[in-house]
Length: 379
Image (cartoon, rainbow, N blue to C red; front, side):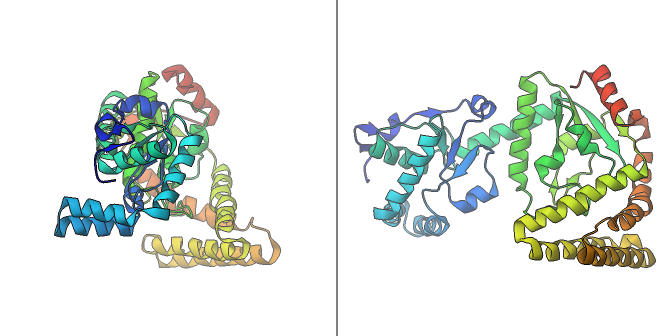
């Protein structure tokens, strides 16, 4: 295709949509035709990547554009994506559209790549699929602006408490909340990493912006968040939102040490091992998980101090050995309790000392849920 007119429809006539709010609130399926490397750096939750050009093709066209110019770059693109290659990609797009008849598509700026995709789909099926005006860049800008607006207008209520106290479990009882650790795909502590990587910083910001936008649309301005550090894993909470968190009322969840040990055991031992084994197989998963636990202790060795570090590593080694030989994992609770009481609790006490003036309520789970319902109408 070398001209703008094909099959009685022109590039200029192809439909575009720019009601970003409706697209996002309705979870409209989106076809991202950018190269995989672009998609990996940031996309939208309802999008699927079926590229017009793969990474190598995009790089070659980019070099051609830089060295020779626009027209030659376009010609090279059509040479690289032609014949069977072109047909395979059009078939994949058409399959996506058949499964998602209300979908839209986008490239980076809503330009040639999304226009060509529209054209080729129309040529094969006669269907005209809208593209996002301004592409990924325009919708990303919209989400950045909306995240800023949300940060100004929502009224966060922060849920604090000692490590392992079950803050996430309480959050899941509330509709008007945002689960940051879920969005960030990380449990928050040095032991909180999942097997598969965290989403990109941009993906997290996009997803967070959409979730806050949905709450605002439902007039949910009081929202419950877990009290977190500025970073969750290797990703950061957007600065404007985090500043709002630091000025917001704080509710402290309380529980006895044994309950905290049991919750931590469920997350660090039962769920984490199952996750590793699902990802890598039973034997390799066990090995990877045991190595991971040891690496977590190594990361905090300096803060633990030499004696306590060696003691905890010995307790971990004994627990792993018993579990491997007998299948009994209960011995992990010994090092978990020591880690919670002797390592995490002093850090928590220090951090809490700087937030005491923000504390408005403290209590066990049911009391906190009742307080949230009565004081803030959180359900």
